[in-house]
Image (cartoon, rainbow, N blue to C red; front, side, top):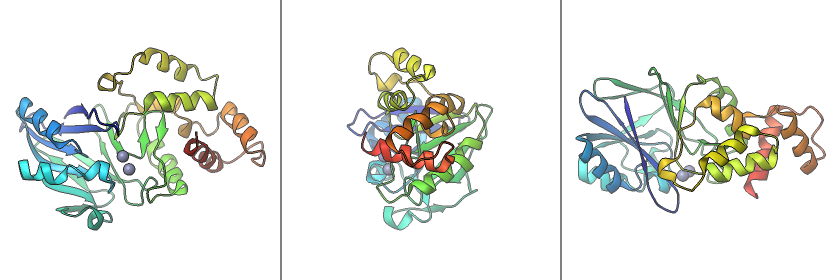
Length: 263
Ligand SMILES: [Zn+2]
Ligand SMILES: [Zn+2]
């Protein structure tokens, strides 16, 4: 499996991905809003885009479908429950479905509600596992819930699904928000050396060269995976005095999500 990350250069800070089979040259495009960039990149690598996958129904993920279908004839795949809102979907997906790309690539569909109620993440079980997580998980952050989702669902997705994947999983989110999210981590957890180091190492803003994190990295720098950190809890209790001394992970997650909304 070859993963080609394409920086959109747009104001939404989208990342697009081409997932290609090295043997057949067939490729799947994930959320190709700036579809001309994806089309040009595929051409330059000698690949044919045969499938488009939308992680969810938001326009900043689906807006390139018709252009790319027009240029390539690719089939559109999306969560079955989002298909009617997206339109033009050829294959509705549910949890556990497998998407094949060419002869060598298999991607498993995870049903990951929270950012929206019908959100798909793609997981690759390859030697180096990979997760294409749309607006569910960002580098050092999580998607918001005001576009049709719910923080309780997002918590369940994080704890019961994402946190259970292998630590070596490479994380491929739908947007580049790393610096801002690291600043939030440091606001919540000023003693988080990993977050401080990464923010410094990151240096000048060049999203096209932004690092690809693993889930092991995320567990160190992403407050959504650090619900039992004593510093996170102590700082949160300053903002929410009603939170007990030993709050449940669920309450911590929901309060963090709430704080991040207005931060
Ligand atoms: Zn979204
Ligand atoms: Zn988005």
